[in-house]
Image (tube, rainbow, N blue to C red; front, top):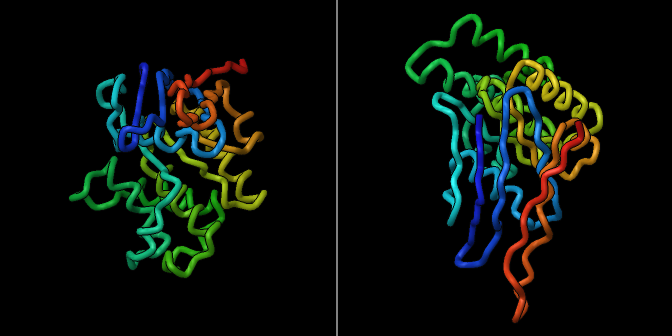
Length: 222
């Protein structure tokens, strides 16, 4: 459904990613791993179309919808949204901004809030939530889009063990239902859920004489 071929990316001329190739197919999960600063978030932004590569291409099959959960979303706290309103925003993509939410849309929102243990927070404002509650709300919003490809950046980093299990169960279910999931993670347990792992190398050494670059390496588990 989504293919990235020989991606390069630079910030202000400094190489961040070099020659990264991957493929996301239906009913599969790919874990993107590597040390801090190796370009995991940048790669996800390229896959979602938020950034443009310096070289290489990202191809999405016609009609494919991609949902991105970024790692940093602090600006959303400034919006006077409740938990339920935030999750409902995820339904605007499949339903259209000018359409009223259907019974199915409302059931999807309610079900996701229940699955993630935030149904009792439905009327709470985002700014009133703890970090973990807020993260689960944003995860619910991403899942509510029913996208063909889910691109998630460290989705469980701020969560306790029980909440991580809830998210992992949802990821497994979404893959079983046919979605492609790409998740950047430092969590070994989360990475183990994936059939494949793309390991990005350590940040590029920019000392004089260093050779820029380093290619991601994909590993298959099964």
